[in-house]
Length: 93
Image (cartoon, rainbow, N blue to C red; front, side):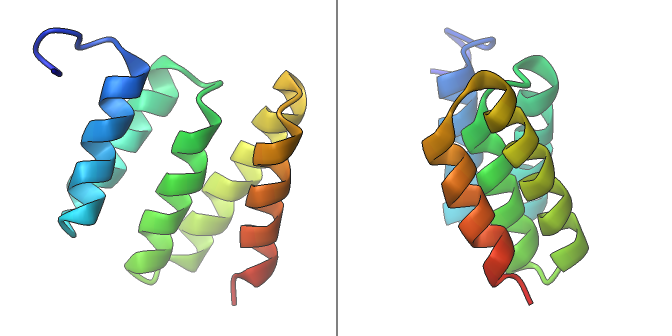
């Protein structure tokens, strides 16, 4: 799918999720970063990049992604994503 649609944000998100689910966290983070750079309004990428960071103990990194995601969600009016990321941020130790 990636070969057929390399610029499709949804496809790139699914690839990053596959990396994450396979515990290939470095690859997942790289793919989420690439997606965020290409499509900065794809707010789910911030949330999941934060989760990847949290999985490897990078709490500061997780905070950074969530804070960026919250701001982006506010800017585009995605209140659901904003509230989910705020809840995740509030639960970080």
